[in-house]
Length: 98
Image (cartoon, rainbow, N blue to C red; front, side):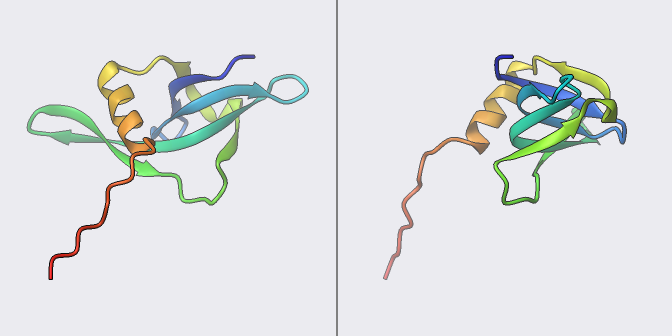
């Protein structure tokens, strides 16, 4: 199955966003590359999400499909843009002023 950028909701209510691929003998898992956990939060502007990098050295994690309350779906354009900024390979030079 082809890799796809998606967002899904865990049973805990947190959201996970990353590049999903079905995996396993019966495709009972997703391999998720470059994953970000999104915690829902309320602000003056309404409902939003706080991105948090998944605390692992692994570039991909295995996620059991039964641990999802909402299966992977295409994220909003605003979330896609945020994701691209988090994982862009742009290196910002360190400026030292003496």
